[in-house]
Image 1: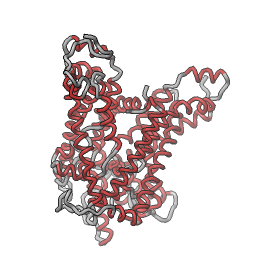
Image 2: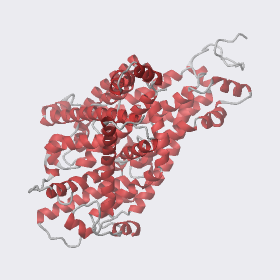
Image 3: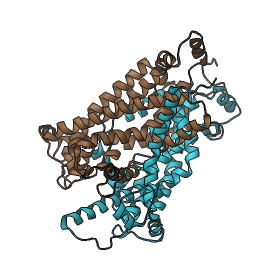
Length: 296
Length: 324
């Protein structure tokens, strides 16, 4: 019996409201990116652009942004490289370590687990972090974007280990009898069985790399190495600086480069890959977190 | 040769003497140790080897002198920080913001999870979930742009709406610190409630249906069922997630705060957290790396206590939920 009770209506309204609130800011950003710059100056940000214009996007795809001297396309490329390489290596390192921790024949595996766990509890802070990375030469090069902080996460490793624990030991035993060593068992037996959790941590790592700007802000000065998020960040602060200067000096607006729509357009294409990967994110990311948090 | 329990069936030559020592283990399970080596080295270098640099907190280090040659100043750097007004302000901001983040986010996501659970139409449910989850995948830099579209003084949609509703004055949002605690909490909930709701929803789905059936037979209303069955049974999940967040309560979200607030000094009174303060102390032109390290030590020590105790509580009371 399907009664339309007030509580049922209330529930649907509540959820729809939250969904709408989730969606609106993104819609606004998208709308502004397609709005003609002059209409922004007269009307402000609107959900429905008074005048459509793809000028911001053409500027992104065709060249440099005045002032920043770094092209969005270049940053996109950097972000792509860093994300792909970082994720692949990270997943490899993590899964291999998880295998060892899940290998009941390794007598010291619990000591190893504690070793990793302890490192999760204590972070020395940004100064030691910076000094260490500087000392290692991880400054102003591509490795500075890939290696620090993001290349390995103990949390993800424990996630994989817990999954591997569910693989029956008899599998390893029979493989060993057949003459397989740990390398073979790890790569040819365990990895194929663990594809779901590997997919999950790939998304975790991938997302961290794509969204990262901490490594850049601390370790990168070279504009050619700016990842996309950091470029976005710079764009915001530079423009703000210009605007602040304009309001102080009272300078009348000579034709400034399209600031507002350009900013929003850059933000939109930064989200690009996430939108494309969204079905996968839904499936594996959520599942992984749920397994981690709910545990069976 | 007699086999100990748990030993593999293949016979192995054991070294004389250290039968179960580390060397024996590495010898026996060499490949496994090889597999864990990259991760081991990474943690060794980037975690454990960063700790020696903490001595900077007790020194007057300058970029020309050596780490171990710098003059020792004991607790002077700590003194400097604690005597300043900033110490209390940023610590309070960090704790306050994190507490607000945790409480509001938890409450909203529980309510959402309960509501989502009542939705029978699977299609509508999935569409809502998909949209709700999206903000979680964005970086705070991108979100800071969205905040700008709303709160910008000249072009922002909020001032526009207020003007349409008849308000005479335009509020310069980015100049008033008093608004920003609320704004930050709202945006935090906006970004994270979705994913938390889905996690809680998964926990709710795991509850045995027969419990609800027998409750319904006994005449319990849906509301009573929620109160007496659902909430108590997902309490462990809520507790685990909350505890893990509480463990990080001394660590402000640098990514969030700095990308939204940036260098707007006027907003520091309500939004500056330990992490942004330390960042400026370290990188700013008036910065002092020694002080920055000292504050980092302060944060790490209390942070360690918090993380350790919250993990301990999770392990003790919610064994199934503990990671390690």
